[in-house]
Amino acid sequence: MLLRRALIAAAALGVAAALSGCEQVVVIKSAPVAASFDAKHGNNPLAAADAASLQEALRVRAQVWGIRLDTTPTDAGQIDVKNAQSVRTARGRMTTLTMTLVATAQATVEGFSSRGAQDEQLYCESLIQAIAQAGYTGLKDIHVEVYFNGSHHGTLSWTAATGFVYKVLDGKP
Image (cartoon, rainbow, N blue to C red; front, side, top):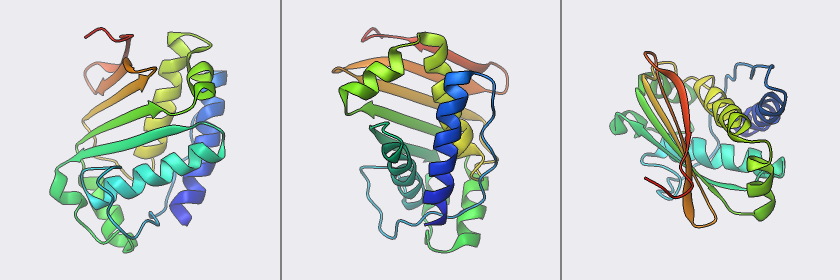
């Protein structure tokens, strides 16, 4: 419940930041609420719980995305997501994160792409900030893959060396 509330607040702030381009997402200190592992949302119980919580937080804000998180090392997320200390420790051990966003409503597609590639990038960055600030402090490599209208629309990548790089693909490799 705590992560859900924090992610709802972070999502609201993230959407505002993406639209305004100038505000930052606040730091989140919480634990996920999902008790069972759903491989549809992630490659380990922690990633799946965090993806499901973020997806629900965005749904509440009328942003309808299917979200999946894949993290490495995978075994770091093989924890009891009800144990807040294990969650904090595991999130800090993650080094790679891939977030897959699939728009599941036309209004989401239209809202996401209505202001151009720069705002798409800011929106994706705000989601990554919300996840990172939830305790993913060891990330060295981040990817966001955006899909809608049956195609791979865009990709955001981040490393310390490159910073954020966003590319609109519109179905092209």
